[in-house]
Amino acid sequence: MNRHHSRTIRSSVAAAMVTVALLAAGCGNSDDGHDHAAEPMDSGGPTAALTTPPPPQLPEQFSSVDQNDPEAVMVAAAQALFSYTPATDPTQAAGADRAAALLDERFYAENKAAFSVLAPITGAQWDRWASANATVTARAAVTGDNHPPDAPARISRVVAVTQTATNPAGAVLDESTVAVYMSATRLGVWRVSALTVR
Image (spheres, rainbow, N blue to C red):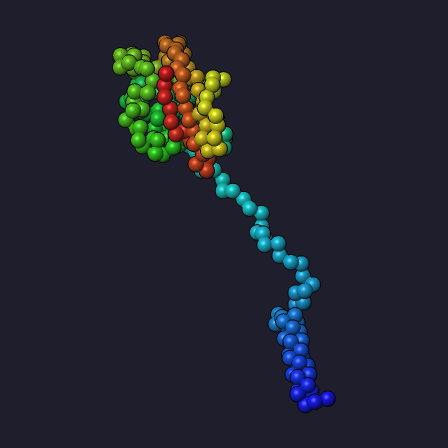
């Protein structure tokens, strides 16, 4: 065997031994004394169950409203928007102030002045109710009327709102029904983002 061939074999054997030593060091035990090869592999997911934060706290009058149900939010908002105590409420806008927790903040801010003339109520009628110390109570229900197709973060519905004005003795002074075209937008939870009274 020639000298060159013998040197090549020795070099190959030395390289193989270094490779084996490096592999053994990489696969050996870690410094923490645990045999990690015996542990199950991490799936990469969270170690605890993911939870969604609770919906924001609403005022007491809306405590039973399911904020994840857009129709429930619309009905509750409509009932607050169209209910008044004219003897103490300066305008219809007081109803909007009470409903503000269920309204999209931007929609509420941009339409604050318009809420004072939301329903077709004349100044004379408002004054009569105020003089009689009347309470105007609104009942609302989503109708089966046609509406635009629902989108994942926006729905529209027609809501029938019946306003009943009663005096302190409970006698009905007036009653009227209006159709309110409402839209709600999902902002984490649902909020009314548009409405038109017809």
